[in-house]
Length: 114
Length: 113
Picture: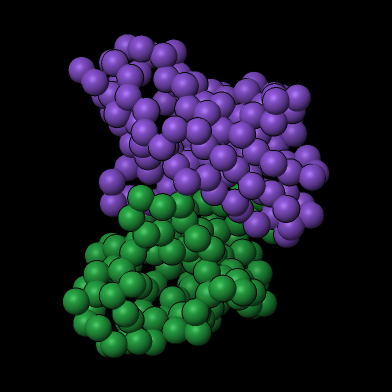
């Protein structure tokens, strides 16, 4: 079975500072990994995805994530935080051996301090 | 633009009064999903359709039903909403050749009074 752990339910960064949101996964087969962003009272918007191609994945809004198999991690980063990045971020994993069902982490709420 | 549409965005219903939430898609995807997301929690899968094949999660309450009359539309019916059913309901779709990807609608916020 697959699972995802997001370390830190709340992260605060200053505007212009590095954003690092952590995600570790567990999967018995090669996983597909995703980061979604959710603004208040809105649905989930796909930021980026890893589907077994390049391990460094670039997404929208300047975000990127690196798949590290040895560390079972897929941390999300952005070099310089913007006020508009304040939102809830979810990491998710799916895999072929479980019918590609999505398993979401519990989410990380990002606050950007002016 | 191809997209997943949910109506209404906000729905208020009374305790015990049946309610239906709607999802439509212009992506022509084979798979459609319904998730329940309670405040400050991750989305929880309720069920999904692969074409007309219905797949219910084991812990989805019987109070929740779904219909998919055609490829484009999928409905979530809550037969007797309780206060605990107040949540954001998210619809998502996947293409048959990339079922590991999901595309989400904006969600419907359900309030039960």
